[in-house]
Length: 71
Image 1 (cartoon, rainbow, N blue to C red):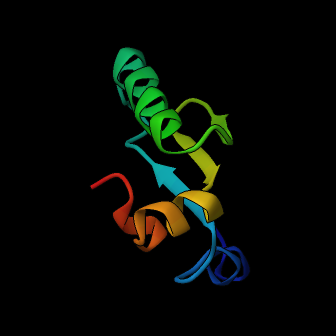
Image 2 (spheres, rainbow, N blue to C red; image 1 turned 135 degrees about the horizontal axis):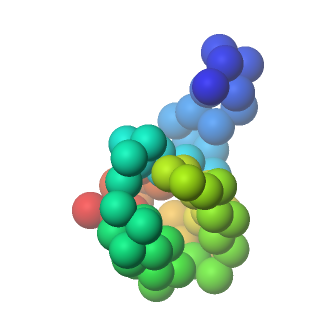
Image 3 (tube, rainbow, N blue to C red; image 1 turned 180 degrees about the vertical axis):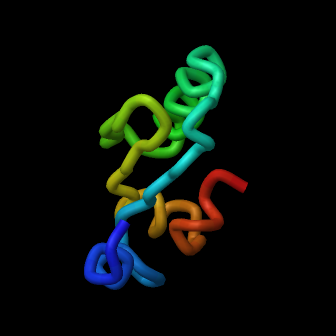
């Protein structure tokens, strides 16, 4: 991603951007999407190896930074 994008979804943003290795197993990728779906219903898959999720409500609910939500 470019620098402008990194600033737009940087620390403090309610958008969680997940990137897997390009050769991620499709089953593992679907599992990741399911796990993120447990945190927020607003998940947009970017196959074959990435996803973005709107986590503003989840951030308030879990009281965590977006990068800490899956942990």
